[in-house]
Image 1 (cartoon, rainbow, N blue to C red):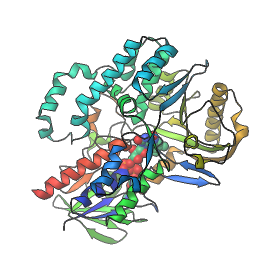
Image 2: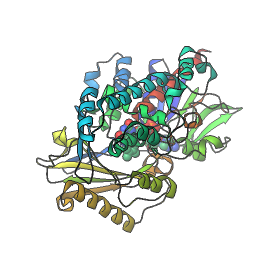
Image 3: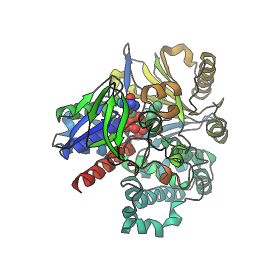
Image 4: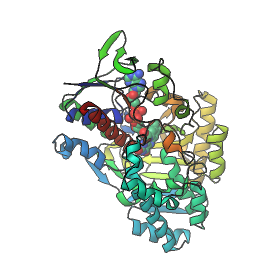
Length: 491
Ligand code: FAD
């Protein structure tokens, strides 16, 4: 049987393994950490459980599909619930908005809070849907880098409707032209951060991002986000995929432009096909040193990183839901700091995720597990203790101003994750959360392909390559890679 070696047990690595196993390949995953899941990880401190990385789960059917593919009952592996609100938004002038999950309710409620015409909001949501439907198959579900994918009806339809795609304006300009209330503009601008981009630099086509939340919904696994990677790891083991932990791949060995094997410590493991789930930048820097670097792809600006505090809070905040955003007063300045000045902004937008609102066992009684995150520049710098302390104070004072509280006195447990920690733990270049930022109208084409024409039988999956970062897109990259390998093997 042909065999595949996968470097990295991130979500895309595991998903690729599951798909290829189903196609009859022998699959080995080599993972440098002593756990699987990469950025999807968790930890426990006393009675508090924290998801370390992702907190927002969309398109759960992409996970379910992998379980069904192996003929198993999804419910015995992975359970999740749909949320009836997507996010609670807060501003310093006491305006609050709880966004209902149902699009019609969203329109009604947003119209009354922001004094915006219902039809206007409805029209905007419909345009997010149109954009998604026009482009998803073309841009997200196929390799963009093969001309045959552009010679079909769907591609033609997208080209005919190119005006609708809003490629020229920035997302912010698009939103500003759509709404008169700056708060609603800010709310829709925030979706740029779902792939670590700035709304002032990402094109208007990214207004399709809310589609996933608005029409498909947001979800939470019953055992927390960590269960996404852990349930798939269990399935991988059950179907005979070999996962080797604490085994960092040092080199991909290729000969006459064909990938042949990987070197782990001093051992050589041969393979018919090799997939790197490692960050693309780091792949070329470390395990593909002898390969020619695709300068154009690697020159692309990285996505933002994050600074996160995990707080055990010994109080319940009734005003907060599972996802909460405390908006910065000057969004433009905030993004200018993160992407242009590569600095932290003094009045950051603060995201608070509290899974104990739904999963009661995630915190002791009358307490909450707060995941408090701000956007950070991905510049690879180590933050000094003084700097972390200063940013922590800025976050605390923002929370105190908006929620009218004195949060410090309720913090009984604290951990912190910096961009450098993210880089160390997952080899993500400079701690970027989503690989490359989607800045500029050609960013989708500049993201590295799922293969390289330079080296045969070598493939790439995960958040730093096509179609992009975030759990759903990583799962789609696994689908693209497994299809490419299957075609290659058949021919
Ligand atoms: P990664 O998770 O990056 O894993 C790569 C794996 O490769 C790691 O396990 C690493 O140890 C391993 N590896 C690296 N080098 C080697 C080597 N030489 N040998 C062997 N193994 C190696 N997405 C969402 O959808 N929703 C969110 O709310 C969200 N929020 C996020 C918040 C944070 C703080 C972070 C960090 C990310 C967030 N994301 C979110 C993004 C999402 O987590 C990632 O896009 C996704 O998990 C990346 O998966 P991946 O398959 O690319 O691999």
